[in-house]
Every structure is written in structure tokens, then in C-alpha cells.
Image (cartoon, rainbow, N blue to C red):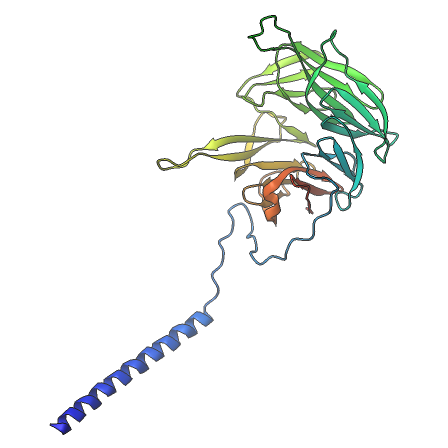
Amino acid sequence: MATRRGAGQSWRLFVLCAVAALAGALLAFWLGERRDAPAPQRPPDPRGEEIRADAAPPPEEPVVPLNGIDRLVAIADEEVCAIDGGAIACSDDAGRTWRSAGELGGRILALLRSADGHLVAATDDGAIHTLDRDGRPLRRRTLPSAGDEPPHVVDAQEREGRIWILVHRFDRPEDPMRLPRVVETAVYAVDADSIERAAATGGFTGDRLLAGARGEGVTFASADARAWRYDTTGFRRIPDARRFGARYDGIEVAVERWAERLEGPGRPARPASRVVVSHDGGETWVPAFHANGEALVDFLDAQVGLVVARDEGTAWLTANGGVSFTPARRDDRLHLAIAVVHAGGRFVVASSDARILIVEP
């Protein structure tokens, strides 16, 4: 009996050792295969080349002496100015270094640099300010009033050495229960020496301005799809189905925004943007870029442009007029981007918390 019991225990011990040896061999083989196998690769983005996940950390951004930035303006080849309410900071080297350039009481809508080197600023109270290079005020003018009714400035933009200002005038209803309505929309052209009434029409014709060359441009409504073209002869309604965009040396670019409905019950809609381009003066348009959320765009010329996809935190570069895009920079700071302009052959991106990112094409 003792002999049989010892033989059984020996047999069970042999089986356990064999199983353990086999498991160890399989484990060693599996670990060796894992070491030799290549690391999984991130699939490339369909819009261009792969974004490297192990890219070098972003360089330290330039310091802007402002609490925040709500507008970014390219003034000259190398000069860019940032605006925070009534405060101005400017860069003379395309965004690398910044200096304070003055502060005004009203909210600044547009800037230009005059031929004599002075800074001309238009504020939302209808005033035109002239400042020296250090920000000291030199001159203050105001837009003309219609009787005792002051103009209500709603938007402004610099283009070709002039500031174009969009103005509303309201009626004064006798009935206190009725709200004032827009009875005239006008565009003024302002430079360092003159204020000219460029176009006017009765009623509401937009609350946003896209200035063009040679005294013409587009006004549009921010709350719906209505838009008008203006020149010295007046305003003309643009058909709702016809697009318009900013012009860059032979290319027109527009950003369309809408809300995408997500599939599934109870899921909210999300904002989306699409960049479309035209190479024939706005006759035909081609979709060039799609992004979830907000997209900001600027072009150096008809070929080189940059789109900042805020939700992605990525800046995308095109070198062929929007035919294809490649990722130029991925940075979490781009989630707060509010504007992009070109200066000195590069793109300068501003965030709402007063940070600047430079993208070299």
C-alpha cells in the first residue's frame, strides 16, 4: 500500500512539473514575439500626413502685454497688432516680440498705420483716434451725426490703407412699448486725414462688414443668411444661395458654419465648419476642409493658407490653394484661438488669453 501511494504521488508530481515547464515555454515564446513585433502605428489623418505623437514640445510663446486678445490685425509686412478692448499691443517682427502701443476709452474695432507712422484707431463710440508710436493720443475725430442722433458703430475693418466702418442709425419711436429700429445703414471710409461716406441705404442691411478693394465690399447679417454688396452706388441684396468670401490674391475663401445632428436618441448637436474656395471670382466653389467646431482661416496668397481647427487643437497648412492640407502644428493652446493673420511670410495665431503662436509655412 505504501509503495503504491508513493508511486501515485510521484506520478502526479511529474505531471505538474511537465505542465509548468510547458507553460513557461509558451510564456517565453509569447514575450519574445511581443518584443520583436513593431509598435502599433497611429493611422494617418485622411487630410494629410501623420501627426507625430512624440513631436518636440512647443516653443515658448511670445509675451503680449495684454490681459486678453479679442482682435488681431495685420498692419504692414512685419507689423501685427493685438487688441484687448481699448488696449493695443503691437509687434514689429511678425509676432516674435511685443510692446504696448496705447489704450483708449472705447472698444477698438480696427487699426491702420498711416504714411507718417501714426496709428489710427476706430472705436465703437464713433471716434477716430490718432496715436503716436508710443501710444500717446494726438488727435480725435468723430463720425458725422444725423441731427442729434449719433451713429451706432457695429463693425469695422482695415483694408488697403483705410478703415471701413459700418454704422446703423435708429429711429426714436414715440410709443415707449416699441423698440427702436434701424432706419439707415451706412459705410464710412476713414484714413489719417479724411472721413468719407462711402455708401448708404435705408433700413437694415447687415451688422457685419467684409471690406473689399476699390471701395466695394459685403455686409451681412450675423443671425441669418442675408447679405448685401455695396459700392459708391449703394447696396444690392445678394441672393441667399450665392456665397461670398474674403479675397486673397486670386482666391476667394469662405467659412460655412452649422450644427451637425449626432445619431442616436438624446444626443445633442455639435457645431461644425467647412472651408470652401473659389478660383473664378465666386462663380463656383469647392469644399476644401471640414472640421468639427470652429475653424479660422487666412491665406498668404492664392496657394499658401492656414486653417486652425480649434476643437482639434491643430493648424493645417495648404500649399496648393486648398486642394490638400497637411498638419503644421498640434498644440492645446490652439483650442482658445480667436484669430489668425499672416505677416512677414508666416502665420500669427492669437488666443483669447493673450498668447501668440507662430506657424511657419
